[in-house]
Amino acid sequence: MRSLTRQVLLDTRYTLVGFPATVLAFAISLVGLAAGLGGVVVWIGLPMLAGTMLAARGFADAERAWLSDVLRRPPVRPRYRPAPPGAGRVRRMLNPLMSGQYWLDLLHAIVNFPLALLSFVLTAVFWAVPTGGLTYPLYGIVTSRIPGNVELPELLGLGDGYLVNVVFYVAVGLLFLLILPFMVRGSALLRAGLGRALLTGVAELQERIDDLAEGRAAAVSAEANALRKLERDIHDGPQQRLVSLAMDLSRAQRQLAKDPEAAQDTLKSAITATRETLDELRALSRGIAPPILSDRGLAPALAALAGRCTVPVELDVRVTGRYDAAVENALYFVVAESLTNVAKHSQATVCTVRLVHTDDRLVLTIGDDGVGGAHVAKGHGLAGLADRLRAVDGELAVSSPEGGPTVIVAEVPCA
Image (cartoon, rainbow, N blue to C red):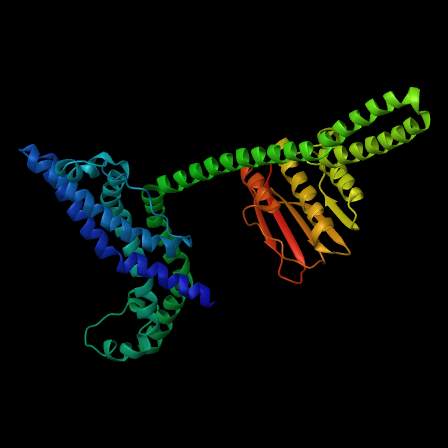
């Protein structure tokens, strides 16, 4: 109830208190536009038009502040193109004429007036009627005794007298009071919709474009880091083992003729090194999307990861069917990296992995009862996972206080 009352008051402030500013913006913009476009001398008309646009921007900034409360959204401020570096005085003065958002601000100041007027009238009426009706028992004592005064109930044939008037006006007041929140909200949204389209629509689109660009850059960075890590791991591990294996085999070949027993020992050592190399290659291959993921999907792939983890994993996968390959790969790597961290650092005794399809999102939750301390700071494995998820419009949230437990939640949109 308190939230509803607060929203009604915010919407009322927007439509009633903000209306004088709308009238002033309409008058200044219309007069300034007419004077600027109709200026006989270009050096007078263009500066007047630029000044009008600056004034329209000021009114637009005020409107955006109102919109934040009405639309229940964080304030959005568009980008205004600045004058080029080193521009002269005239170029800087006329810079508003070169920016599309200034023209949108000016357009809003003009076309917003009729909608603001309608919103103002509706809000004023739906506040005035219940206020007048519910307070009639106070002032009606005077009006009902004025000679020759005819009340509305009498005109409607409902009877005469103070009591009849009280019942009628209070009933009308209560009816309008019940409708008031909906009408005030609708009036505010009627006006706010235009403001959002003209004053913040371009900015929201630009933010979306920037997010996509950042996500693409994050994906490229994550892939490059993964490739560098894989290359480093191969160089430091299997490659060195293979070099040592080749040397052992060459030594065994030379020993066969002179010392067969020593050659047997060397071959045994080479076989052991071969097995260790294969184990290390299998471990490294977990950082690459396995065939089971591309062939059978997320559920079997996650089951394979859980089976290889050295910490017991409780797996709860409630999805069926296939999803976009990029989405499946991103979630697979989140689980793979998380389980690796659990096995290496968490000191956990049990880990849980849960994947569900909620509305239009896949929600992955990974938890353990370990010592905590995981975070997404740059340079850590989870930071790379956050970049992978951003590439598919996903989000990563980590809760891991010192002492545990750790909970990692990844959300990815899906069709």
